[in-house]
Image (cartoon, rainbow, N blue to C red; front, side, top):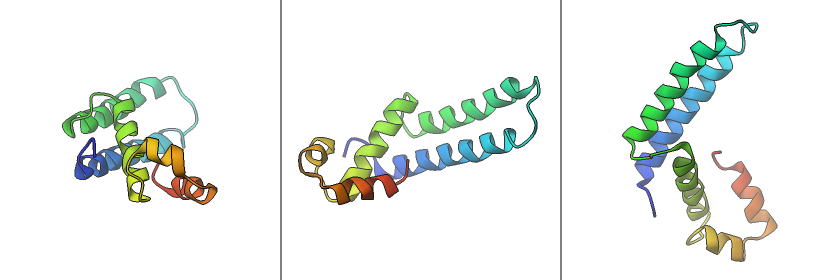
Length: 97
């Protein structure tokens, strides 16, 4: 596995927190302060990912996707691409994204 499962799960928590706080930000009517209010949310998420050893959002999502396919019983993303059935693709869609 390219990244530690615990690091990926902690990264998922950071992204979930960001998503929840982002949704709360947009629950209010649009106002000029939204960009300034959004930036700290993004920075907190990025710091949480960096703390887990991820240098970018893309690096985290790649590792998370790899964990998803491994949890479905595939050796790697390449193995998934080569052997997955429609049911496997559907199961992947139900995994954390």
